[in-house]
Image 1 (cartoon, rainbow, N blue to C red):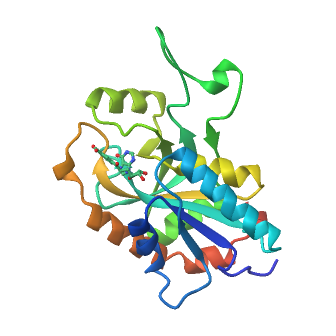
Image 2 (image 1 turned 90 degrees about the vertical axis):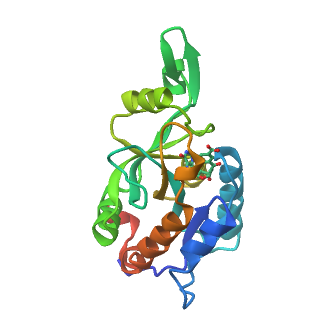
Amino acid sequence: MASAGLDRVLVATAVPVERDAVARAFPGGTGIEVIAVGVGPALAAARTASALTAAALRGEPYRLVVSAGIGGGFQPGAPVGSLVVADGIVAADLGAETEDGFVPVTELGFGTVRHQPPTALVRRVADATGARTGAVLTVSTVTGTATRAAALRERHPTALAEAMEGFGVAEAAVAQGVPVLEIRAISNPVGPRDRAAWRIPDALAALTEGFGKLTPVLESWNRHDS
Ligand SMILES: O=C(O)c1cccc(C(=O)CC[C@H]2O[C@@H](n3cnc4c(=O)[nH]cnc43)[C@H](O)[C@@H]2O)c1
């Protein structure tokens, strides 16, 4: 099948500084669309769904959605400044707290808590960028204690990062049959709250560098590859 170019790839970041960091990787204007969809899974889902629907109504549906931005890294697997590509996009706090611990909505009999990016594409992104591969958790509350970080790691042993939008972006994409990726540049460790430890400029630079290496991967990939 012929390459589809970058023109029907949508990148959804949370905030404008992340959007601009991704866009800097494409200075010539490749046609890739990069939008800021807001912080948190609900707003990210709503705005991503609107963008997908508008494109479909124009007769130019997106062929891939990428949730991208900064995120917290579980240590030592995802150091600050590193890049993570999700092999699973997981809603980590969608469920019920019980005396016996957290119960995901799927065990309550409804919904889903995990979306699966295309395996071959994840591998190619990791090869091209040097990104580490693991689950990326979506949370509505940023982890701020060692206890919660440990609980998340126990429930999700393959998790490398947490952020706040991936699952929302993925829900919107999957609802319209569009494949989805999540790429996070690590700005802070997941664990005890320490604002002084954030390295946002370093993470934004890693995001730009990573996307700079992705053009051939995104151009040549089509969904039948995996
Ligand atoms: O106030 C805090 O302690 C705090 C710690 C980390 C992040 C925040 C944010 O408000 C950033 C939310 C924004 O950035 C992404 N992000 C970055 N690091 C993390 C994290 O460790 N856990 C969850 N989200 C993170 C997130 O996707 C949002 O877009 C505040």
